[in-house]
Image (cartoon, rainbow, N blue to C red; front, side, top):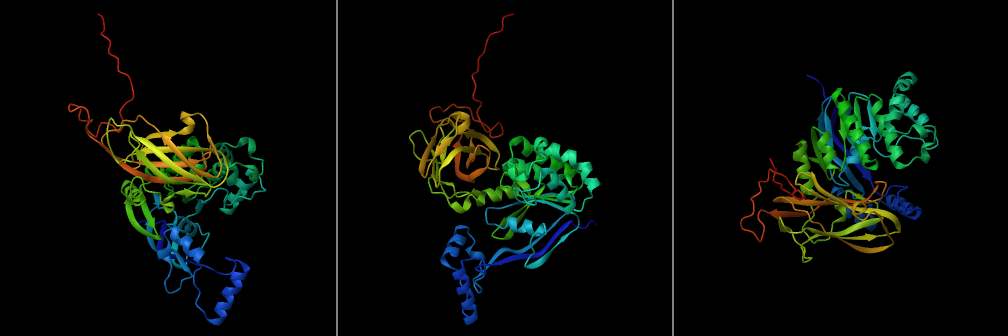
Amino acid sequence: MTKPIIQAKDLSKVYRLGNLGAKSFADDVRTLWNKFRGKEETLDTKVIKQLKQQDSIGRINPERKNEFWALHDINFEIQPGEVVGIIGHNGAGKSTLLKILSRITEPTTGEVILRGRVSSLLEVGTGFHPDLTGKENTYLNGAIHGMTKKEIDEKFDDIIEFANIQHFIDTPVKRYSSGMHVRLAFAVAAHLEPEILIVDEVLPVGDAEFQNSCLSKMKDISNRGKTVIFVSHIMTSVKALCNRCYLLEDGTITSEGATLDIIEKYLKRGQASEVANKLDHSKFEYDTGEARFISIDILDKKDQSKSRFLYRDPINIHIQFEVYEIIDRFLVSVHICAPDGTPIAYGCNIDTQGKSFSVKHGQYSLRIKTDEKLHPGTYFLKAALFYPTGRPICLIERTCEFTVEKFAEDNDHSYKWPRSQAYKMLNAEWKLDERKT
């Protein structure tokens, strides 16, 4: 029987909050004085507030309040050649788990058994020396992964072609854009012939063509019997790539199984409470702090919040967001998605108005009028604030679930659309000409 290429046994990771160096000098002195007096350490108000915002307060040991459990009793096995997704909301413990699997940090308890060489892409620029050129960093990374110069020479042209940075290969990477950084980093990680490839949430930095290339490359690696662990908040990518998934919540694995089943559980977990309610910041998949959604509502033709429509009704969207600093250029996008996360319709202000928004500190209201005619069923919205380069500012994966009913309000004889036909009505003119013979 083939042994698993990755095994995690009773894996836990605890961080001690308030340790020396984590606070101001005065706080450190106070901490040492309390320890000298034998006084129990407690979390300060600021830390507790931050943890509550991350839905993590329950992961603090009540007996030792300065401990935070990022992971708790993680157990799983991954077989050679599998492509496994790990999904979960911010603060679930995904990055901590990948750092342990990549041997960047050690677990507090338990163990990880890896039966193969690991290549990881965890953050943009990880493992690159900023003052070295792209070429020098490629050879450095290959050497770190145990490759000889001859082996790297054989792969070098393929790496540079995949990354599409031929003209900048002799430029120090500190002058690279984030997109160039991630293209080279992925190309190096994927071409070093690892038995295990670990990819964290980095693909959104690249354009659509590069993302498709990355997915194709990871499929190719899997087809050659290698193992891929993929973490992403983009469910269409997870669905296209992964055979099965683990759902991570509050530092523990709560579900494991077929990809579509786990994605459905993930999306339901992240669903906002009701239409017209303010958004919970802890549910944002990205949040740089530069700007944030306040609320997202679906409105009818009378500008009333609504969650039930007839298929001929207009579906309008009202977005409120707050900006915390001047942003010269940014975009807003909205997806209408099917229950499994499949995008049905997409809109972005750059496509309709031909320009990006420029804003300063303050609150803003954006109204989007559409003429979409959706088939009967249940849908939800996904929305993002992002820069023209593709770098996200704020992203919410699922909000505003709504339903479309079967019949038009003004016509009792409307065609009864079967759900199997399509999600959208075709926006087209139909012209019938009699053919002369």
